[in-house]
Length: 154
Image 1 (cartoon, rainbow, N blue to C red):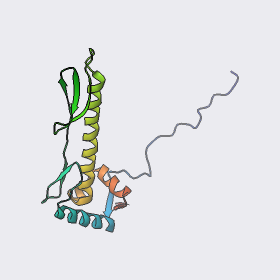
Image 2: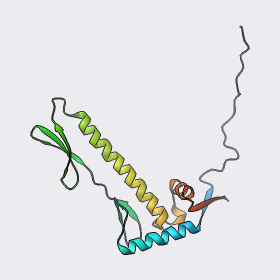
Image 3: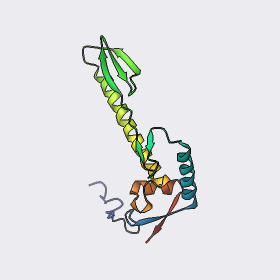
Image 4: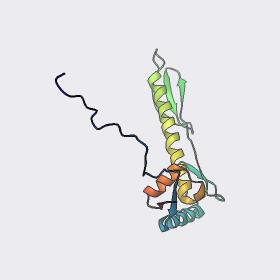
């Protein structure tokens, strides 16, 4: 052998010792959270809600409005139609069945669903629609990154 084999940096066990578990972390809401919650409540009282969400006036819980697009075949064309019946895009039907066209519409619908569900979750976390003790890890993480909460160890 021309060189000595060594294990490199060695075997370091990834135990996570010293790193607090997200499940053990608690958050403390800041003044920014309170200000934001009051601002959202004032906007709700005026009738203003974020686009793509329907907000319950009593509980302040947001749910996504999912405007799904569908594909219809009209003569020698396939059309992408929105929830109101308006044509978004159309192309000539081909012998292969326009697989790319159908797949693109399906992917856009999945993307819209994902984004609006995330927006509703964040709105619920910041508006008080979800009580602070029932926040998910993702919602806590969002509040901390927005500066509306601080993490402390038990």
